[in-house]
Amino acid sequence: MTIHGLLSIIAGLLLAPLLQGIVNRTKAVFAGRRGAPLLQQYRDIARLLRKGAVFSGTTTWIFRLAPSITLACVLVALVVLAPAPVEQGWGFAGDALLLAYALGLARFLTVAAALDTGSSFEGMGASREVFYSALAEPALLVGIAVLARVSGGTSLASILQGAGVAGWVSAGTALALVGVSFFVVLLAENSRVPFDDPNTHLELTMVHEVMVLDSSGPDFALVTYGASLKLWVFSVLFASLAVSPLGLSGFALLGALTAAVLFTGVIVGTVESTMARSSLARAPLLLAGACALSILAFILASRFLS
Image (cartoon, rainbow, N blue to C red):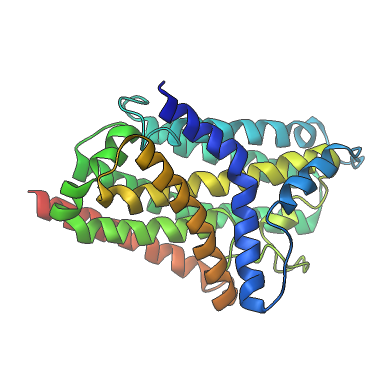
């Protein structure tokens, strides 16, 4: 691995909580408030690490191990994806499936930990999480298939690097549709508005937040950091497609990609400030629309490149 790939991983590890801070600060600006400091999540994680953990008598070893293993899965996803846009020859054929499976396993462990508490509210949030993921994963995988079709690559590095200027010239419409689909998946997978409201305190309307109500202390710190890291991973996937038409390389590409990821936080904060949370009946329609966009993009890409 070269310095570019290593720096991309380090940037994700260090800046992931900052991305969440940018989202919160953007929402505060729209609301006319001063808002929390950009580095507030770093302080929250540090404070949680100094506290003790409290476990319910209902929980088992599943609940105790889930935060650590979930974070490990998200770290695998970061290592697989982060260097791909800037590192030549990174990864292996089919590593996009490893990315999807790592994120899927992280979700499974979060759901299993929620069910292990025996709480009806956490079980309700777990069922909603699984339902959303069943619609989001096809949109993500088909979107990656479109990029593979345009670039002709089989690894994430060749897929993301191949969708450059030539790819946008030959199949720009298809790539634009994939970008929209990826952003919708980003919002759904990270429990953002319009699919979920991370600031709500009503158990009947929460999805992700209700699943981690029993987590405390260092375990909740791992959950919080893992959620920020997951947001960074999906932002990298979206941002790498957005900066690909620039035709950059080396440190210029790394800097542009990092800036685009951080700007994605501004976009997410803007969406959350200008949209309301959708009802549970309408939210799946958005994910179905994202999946339809990915399928349409694949058809268009095949038509353009045939």
